[in-house]
Length: 328
Image (cartoon, rainbow, N blue to C red; front, top):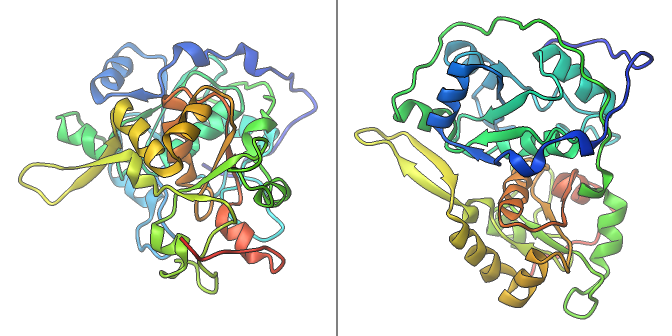
């Protein structure tokens, strides 16, 4: 999406209460999306994102192959600047509204988001929409690879810009986004002793969590935030291989298996407290991207009090004053 001028003086605000969170599913299937495309009223966004050391370019890939009508949501661009230069931080309310206008999205549009991994960066984009009260939003479970594997067609031309819409400035639900200061205070509390402590689950690979494997970002130490739990994001996912090919993609596990993966990490008693809303839980990762996978899995399980640490490990470990641990 091209840079857009932010116009705030003529905007009117709207509240998350105007959304339809309760009636819009978090996940849609390929057939459900295909049916919606046929009937109209859906806006499709490709939110593919790759690690900094990857040679792949998501925008170029979209221009060569995309779900019909899809537009590219650049999570690094629809974002707020950060004092540490961190990427894809939550955008301001006006930046989010301007991005929606550029896509032709209106407050009542059903937004369906996908990525080219299956499930990887699309949950982060969904977190953004839901945090701004756009409850009529979902991800395509299995993404573009599953869409193709199930026989649905793609387009091979760059997307055509849609007519701009009017999107009232939304109100960010600040209770679902955690700051560095909040995480530091919480890290001083032992959740086994203090019932007011939020649980923090880290979506990075376990080797990075315990400090035995390096971080993909040069110069960044590995390790973890005190009192956090290791819950690699792929523990919530199932990997599929398309028959007669080497192409793989991921989808979310069934609810029962998601629940078991959570209980295996934090214990059955704590899992019950989280799922009944008696204990808050925050998700983290390397830079706030795959934390979205854990956030979405927890929301699918019905956990009502789930937050995401926007800066995640990159922001935390970059600061010299941060306390870090490397034990299991």
